[in-house]
Amino acid sequence: MLLAATAWKRLPSGPGKVDFMALSTNAELWRDARKAGGRGRKSLSKRIGTSRMVINAFAYETPRSRGFQGVSRIWIERHGLHAASVVSTLLRREVELDDLFPGWDRPDERPLSDPEIRLLARAIEKKSGALSERERGVVEQTMGGLGQPLSLTEVALKMGVTRERIRQIESDAFRKMGIVLPTGSGRSLVDRRRRARLLLRMLGGR
Image 1 (tube, rainbow, N blue to C red):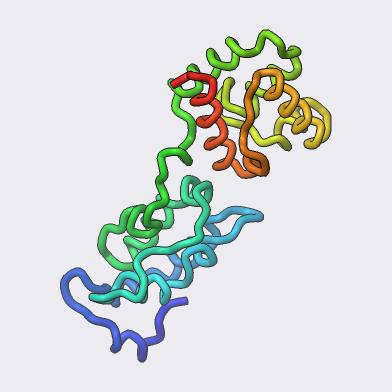
Image 2 (cartoon, rainbow, N blue to C red):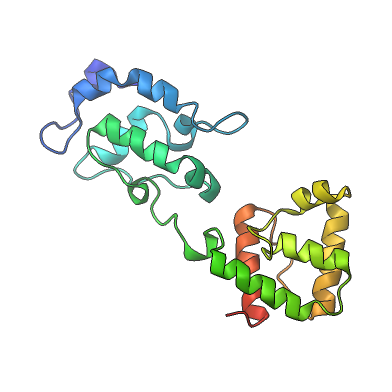
């Protein structure tokens, strides 16, 4: 929703401020941005608000807030650059991801790097002597030994069993490997990345 003309008068103008012509000509762009989340996901406008909220956050000399909180890391990875592009066009100045989502890029939440995946694969192999083929396969998939960590549900679908069965297999494998990971973690993709890095440290991979 674009600001009404009466509201524009309360906003500052001049270099580095809101370009009001851009506001009036980018209504279609903002409508398109609402669909950025894709089917079944919250749209861009629901995630970072309407154009009014964007202006409140970025147009004032002393903004009410700086950036947007509570947006998931995965959503930012998938749609953050598009969001920054839309907001940059709306304000007619460059807006970076860190401007929109302060502190979003925490190192332990990033996708596993290729070297980390290789280290995990070697570390799991060294500890897998007591594991069955199925147990090793589950750990490799859920903890990043074959690529980015998969959720228990994703592995369950691939193996044709229930999510709970995969959890049990994973727990049994950790017990045989002498690994104790925090309980209740690992549900989200970001949590799986953290767990994979923790496992790597516990196995002496780095």
